[in-house]
Image 1 (tube, rainbow, N blue to C red):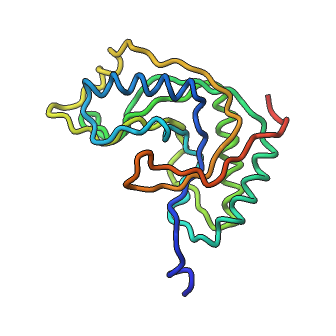
Image 2: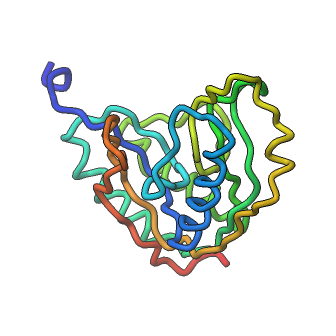
Image 3: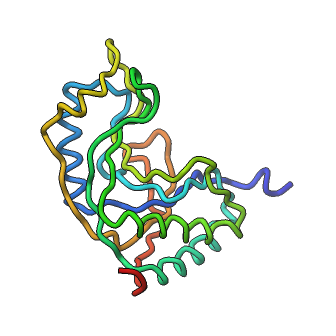
Length: 196
């Protein structure tokens, strides 16, 4: 019964972007906002690559979660990532998400995702049923007066290239009405030497 009344936090685990990558994406998004109508554009401080969505989490799980994630980070080594192209999720004519792809050491990112899932499972967190598709959300809910044309992304020549070293992941708390909306509850440095 206590778990039903316990305070809960909406949590997820993600990899933050490097400063240069965030700045490049922010500049690209500011230009895109002039021509593409989405209901909500992501604040640049909120750019991230999700590793696992945890959902509404009882406060009692926070301490063991932080401890276990710290151990996972200590076994994982940093790796290089880069910004890729842009794409959308949802209906081709009315996408629900505009995103930036991730390039670089994607195999290492998938391995970190797998290690995080192994870490959180004993605490009762279940992985999503859909396949893991790493990306950076830029905007949500297209609201243009005409149908979205996927060719607009292909025609965009403004570019958004940047590389960075992924040397940490974070436990984030979502504050739905805030801007930026994600609060870092924990930051875990990748300090292992495995991998390449």
